[in-house]
Amino acid sequence: MTEVFGIDPLIIKNEYYIEYRHSYGKTSPFFENLSKGKIMATKCEHCNKTFMPPRADCPYCLRETKWVEISGKGKIHTFSTMYFAGEKFLKDVPFYLAYVELEGVDTLLLTRIKTKEPEKLKIGMKIKLKIARDLEWRASDIWAEPDE
Ligand SMILES: [Zn+2]
Image 1 (tube, rainbow, N blue to C red):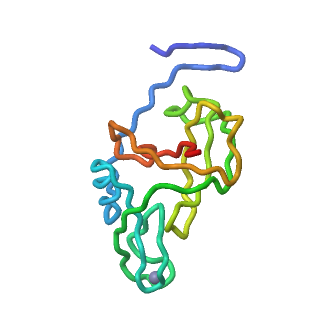
Image 2: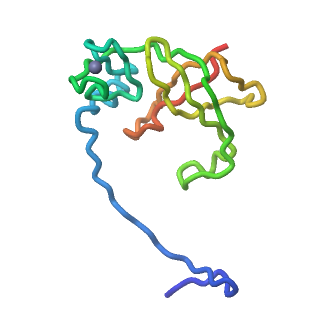
């Protein structure tokens, strides 16, 4: 039986479930290493560029990249406050998303910033990536926290 929450406009309860089977393919080592406490990026030895998020193949020369461990330290390039979110993060609203510049990495990483003092967030602030204790094998298994 359909559960009706409102008439004008009509609002009903609608169950929605989709199971995904997602392969990380060549980037699987990223998640495997998170379980060992290591944050890995990929590096093209031909172009001397390091990618995070990792890329299995270099976007410049198309050669296969190599895995390299990074410190996870860096700084905020830019950030924004999120007042809306998908279901997984609704309980955390407002939260903070940032592009971060990581030591030894040539690309920006989009990640969450977790902090108890959001008023202190600023561009250029030092951060360090953290790894979840209970991995879900998702990008949300890592995030940044202030490192000052
Ligand atoms: Zn390359």
